[in-house]
Image 1 (spheres, rainbow, N blue to C red):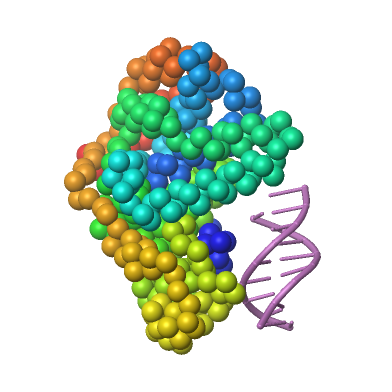
Image 2: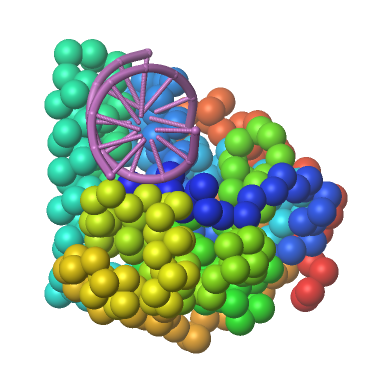
Length: 326
DNA sequence: CTAAAAGA
DNA sequence: TCTTTTAGG
């Protein structure tokens, strides 16, 4: 499984919010929202965040509660959304990924069958991010004047690209894939209470004395979201054989192994679909009244659920201004 | 995600 | 003994 394997390879260090204050973070919106959706629903009844029409709106609560974390630490978030589904539909790679995720979810749901609480949690997990969730999230962010970027395909790839270009100081994501998309610095655990965790691409490469391309090759041998790894190869041996043979192709040839669509997957990491067509103002001037109305009236969220969040947004924004780069 | 089993 | 895989909370 790619995630755990990549973690063992990555150069991670704990940083303080003070150290990263004043920077721009390109947040993988899907990843960030997904995290809130699953954790928020986890310890409360999902009924609470569902409108009469049956629309799930826990994402709105998540945004209101999550944004202050950025503002209070003088971080400017830029939310990067995944690209259109239509474009992805034709993509074999994306299809493969979707199938794999679906399978995992079914497996998990089946495993947890019998436990009502867990079943509900799994249900929330399986629905992924619906159109409504994406749209209402965009609208709320817009009311709060938080910059949004539309990625042509993977939000992670776009966010990583922006960080590589220097348009963002960090990528914000819990995923380790950002390393494979070439993100120089990734901040993890921006939502939880403790300090953020910094993942450093160059330090990762130095640690193993490998190139960026070799890191991608190593990850592919272990398995990524887009391909099954080679059985019997974990992070240790992957590093060993890639350094031994130079690149993925030589390793596969030497072992007589094969990875389906290897060239496409590799290319997808090294040169993913991204766009330069974005721009944002880091001066954030939220219309809290409009945002509150949108959340509590249009979407019928209990005002008490978001009261503190909005208060914190008002306080943090008026105090720091967040207008350094106007 | 952690811990224990299996495999090399 | 070290690495990978699988099971379980």
